[in-house]
Every structure is written in structure tokens, then in C-alpha cells.
Image 1 (cartoon, rainbow, N blue to C red):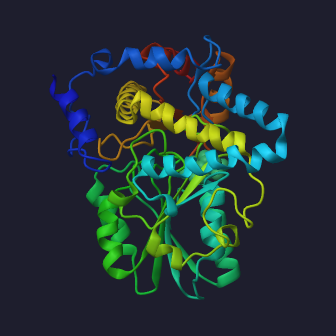
Image 2 (cartoon, rainbow, N blue to C red; image 1 turned 90 degrees about the vertical axis):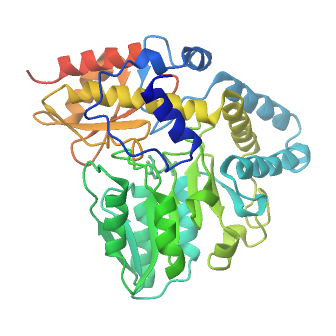
Length: 409
Ligand SMILES: Cc1ncc(COP(=O)(O)O)c(C=O)c1O
């Protein structure tokens, strides 16, 4: 086993934020083939409806569902539509309850801490609407968050008079201790809550939540994670992260049915957050939830089974390895600026960059003409590449070649 392979393995085994501190900067040339698990790529790629000539690098926006998930949703829809009322509120209702159990296992929580939602935004909004905060209370976040997180903070500002402090992190960040220090320094006597992305939507930075929780817990500051870009990309352990709440979506890296998600609310935190949506209980269906989309929710459960069968850590290792390779290749291009961290403990399956002399959407359009699908970031003239395990080295090489062609000489 080479040292780099040991390195990646050690990081995975030791949990989310415990990669050994090191950088790729001075590392020898990265031999991706040595690390990539071809069996995983082959098994997953052929289950997708993405045509063979399309290179899909935009899972961070929406992931392509594998056929077994699509077929599960279709089968449940057929069962439901044969006898809607009795099916929905009979056996299918028991099945959606089991999805909460699956989510709880997937994130290391308890079933009574899990709410099935429609997406990350809804999960974060439930907190924003119901959290008891007073005028003058301060919430800390960063200046590079997704609108789905920001809208709840805007709501709290407008309706409760809270203050929202948006801190700037080093770009790209190079050291987790530095990230923690910047956030710690911003905490003041009125700070009541930190709301941060687990994996940043723009840079892909993995927030060192475990270290942050050691600072917030003694001060009784709530710690809330936006996990939209993390679930399905990496193993999740909300207990180890030390968060009070974790909201995510099923339709991104999990590759699950669209308009699915879940919200973790730690037992102690539930006293602080009592939205109408869970007033009649946390069950998937309740008087306060109203009728649910049982086919999609059962499909979400099937998605979690699918991940467990493939191996969550295997998927994590593959995405991080692919992203490290992608970043290494992008670094060789002189007319772009890398936005993502190289440092392994901060790096994820997302790699972003900013073209220096051309608009991001012009580059994305040229790539799309070659059937290479990337995400144009509204901020920083950025382009985001999502390296899920169904992406191959060949796909990334093709992307790099097409990118060089799309950039001005
Ligand atoms: C970090 C982050 N938060 C929230 C969202 C919103 O996700 P959803 O539309 O599934 O609610 C996204 C979507 O890209 C995201 O990247």
C-alpha cells in the first residue's frame, strides 16, 4: 500500500474531520489508477440513465438516480395508484416510518430525532421559523453560503431582529485549525447560533464541525449544519460532529428521488425548535405533516440501502480520490484560479475554480456542447465539478482537455 493510499484510508477510518494534516502541494505526481476502484465505477455507471456520451459533473445540483431507485419509486407508485387511500395510509405508511429508522442509522442518530422533509431548504426553514431567538441575538455564518441557508437567516433578521454576521474564510482554506480560529474569533457575547455548510456549495470545503462543537457546546451556542452537499458524498455521524441540527437533501449526492430530504434535530435541541410541521409528532405522516409523497420517501429509504450495499466509505474514498486528481490537473492550467482546498482534511468530492479571463457561463456552454455538464456558480465567476463515484478518470481527462479548449489561449 503506498503512503497516499494509506493516507486516504487512515482519513476514512478515523472519521469525518480526522484526515492527517498534509497537502498535495509537494506530493509526487498522483497516479489515480492506483487508487480508483474500477468495480465501483462500473457497477454504478451502468445503473444510470445518463447516456454514455454525457459526462455528468453536476451532482451537487441534482444527482442522477440509479435504475433500482427509479424502479422502486415506479413500483410503489403503481401499488399506490391501484388503491390510493388504503395503500397510502396502510402498508405504505408503515414503510415510510421505516425510512426514518434508516435515516437514523445512516447518520448515527435516533429515530425520534429524524424528520423526513422535502429538501435541505425546508429543513433549515423549519428551524428558522420555530427557533426562539430575540432581537439582538447573533447568528454567525460565512459569506459563501447557499441561498437555501441564507433565506432562513434573512427571515430571522426581518421577523425577530437578530443580527447575522457573515465571516470570510481563507480562500482557499489551507488549514482546519485556521478555519476554526477565524470562526472562534468571530464569536461574541450575543452569539446564539452558528449555521454553516458541512460541505461548502462553492468551494467544497469540509467544515471541521467536531472541533467547532468543542467551542460552541460550553458556551451554549447552537450548532446547525447545512448538509446538502455532504449526504451521499461522505459517511455521516451527527453525534461525532456535535451538531444540534443537520439538514440535507436526498436528491443530490445521495442520488435519491427528487424532493426528498431529512432533518436531524438533536433531542435536547427539540425543546428550542417546535415547528407546526412536527407539532403532532415526528412521524413521517402526522396530522401536522398532511399527506406525503410515499413513493419518493420509500425511494429515499431504498437509496440509503443502495449506499450501504455499495459501501458509504468506499464511495467517499472514490469521490475524494477523483476530486484530488481533478484538482491536481486543474492546477496545471495557469489561466484559472482554484477555489477548493487541497488540504485533505478540508477537501471533498467538489472541486471549483474560476476562469480568469472569460465568463464562467461561456466556459460552461462550450463544455455543454461537448456533453460535459458542470455547475456555473453565481459567486466568484466559479465553475463547480462534482466528482461522484460514477465519474471515471477518462471522464475527468476529457473534461480537462475540453476545458483547455474552452479557455482563451
Ligand atoms: C449548501 C447547500 N444548501 C442548500 C441547498 C439547497 O438544496 P435544496 O434545493 O435541496 O433544498 C444547496 C443546493 O445546491 C446547497 O448546495
